[in-house]
Each structure stands twice: as C-alpha cells, then as structure tokens.
Image 1: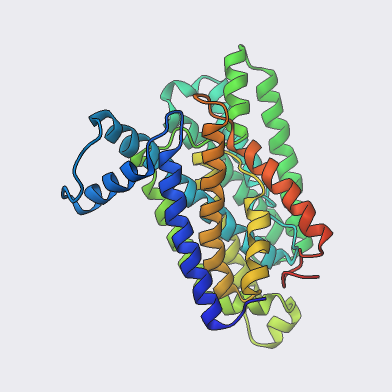
Image 2: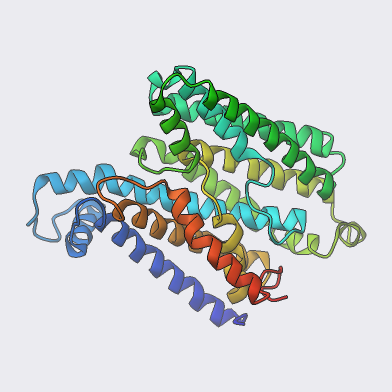
Length: 350
C-alpha cells in the first residue's frame, strides 16, 4: 500500500491529470462525436479568450461544446466528488464500512419532493420546479433524521441515527409510491422513474455555481476536521478521553453532509454506489488518514461519474440511459469483488 508522502503526491498528480483527461473525453463523446483535438483547441481559446489555435470547426460545434457538454461534464465531476466525500464522512461517523451518502434517507426525501412536483402538476415550472421540490424534500428528510436521530444534537448514537434514517426513508419511499400510483398519465410516471434513477441531462451553466460552492465549502470543512475524523474511528469513548467534543463534531458532519447531498440529489436525482465504493478504492491506495482520503476521493469520485455519464450518453445515442443504472452495473460487481478480497474495511484490507 502506498502511504509515503512522495507516493501520495504522485497519486494526487496522476488523479488530477486523469480528471482533466476524463473531462475532455466526456466533452468529446456524445450523440455525435467531436474530435478530442477540436475540444482541446476550443477550450484553450475559450479559457484564455484568445485565438491561440486556428478556428477550423463549425460555429454550431462551439455551442454544443460550451452550452451543452461542458456544463454536464462539470456537473458530473461536482456530483461525483460530492458523493464520494459524503460517503467518507458517513462511513466515519457511523463506523460502518458499507455506509453511503444516502444512509440517512435523504435520497428518498428528494425523490418524494421531485415526484410530488411532477405528479401534482408543478412540473410546468420546468427543471427549477422539480429541483426546488427535490431540495425541499431532501432538506425536510434530513431535518427529521437530525431531530429524531440525534435529539437536536444531544445524543449522537450511531445505531439510533441509522435506524431513524431507515425509518424516515421508508416513510418517504411510501409517499413516493403513492404519488406514482396516483399519476394520471404514463408520461408523468416515466418522468418520475427517470428522475429517481438519476440524470445529468438538464445541466446548465446557471445551475452549477450553487453545487460547486457547496462542494468546496464542505470539502474545506472536512479537511479542517480531518484529525477529528481520524480520532472518531477509534471510538466515541476514546475520542472523549482525548478531549474531543464528539457530539459537536458529529453534528457539524451530519448537517454539512445533509446540505451537500440535498443540493446534489435535487440537481441530479439519486445516483448510487459512488459514495460507497470510491472511499474504499482510495483507502487501498492512500490509507485511512482522512486528510489524504478526502482529497483522493474528491478526485476519484469526479473521474468515476464522468466516465459513467459518458457511457450513459453513448451507449444508445441519441437517448440517455439514467446514470444510476450505469453506476449500479459498474459499482455492484466491483463491490462484490472487494468483498471477495476482504478489502472493504476502514484500512482498505480486512
């Protein structure tokens, strides 16, 4: 296992290069292929606002790249990174190596909010209405879990928190099923099901700033709390003996993760397995130190979701496959492989 500082730096540089490369490839591939060289030349010209490379492509190519594909690929990177970071945080505070960002039921709350808007006619407001409904449902679910599961932050019991999340998730899932059953036409059902399986097809420039700001804020908070996260893995009693305010730290982590996941799920729907398997992949290479693990997961999560979204866009063009299907197809067998190799604990190996 590579744990030395030089090895870790090499990993970060490699992942950063892979992220940039995956972004360019993600922009190139779609219902119509755009040469990688064209994408690279256009992006350099756009970034430096100068004609560094001669323009030898059609004008409509620029619109496809800048207005459609770049926002989608960037949202993929933001969502993948955010899910991976929240996966690390949830696995830490629950001390559960198979926990994922949705363990508190936030995705079920978002699904209920979005489906309610779709079924009850609020979808006439467009993507904004569905996003607002999803965010409201996710936030409501997160608040309920926090209030009931932690008694307003006074009792951060892992078992109580997980069980509360499971119960609240079941309630919201039932509400979603009732709403789908009451749908008046098949188009509403199709929209509800497609959204619940995850989609990045509606990404636009104006909708990227909020999730990006939320992601970078939570990443900064998480890195600042990295030493506390390491101590939490030793157990709550040990952490208290070392003078750490366990309840306060867990409350910050829960609220931060809830806010970030609420925003991401509201934008993209429920995308599974990223927050579950990416932290374990990164632990295998950089160990369980959270300062290293968070940065590694940040980059790996973005790469993973960009690749999955590229597959979803190119498998049956011009139609998009819900991205949750692709992440499950890739993530499920990979996680089974990790279980078979006993590489699913907090240190990367059993």
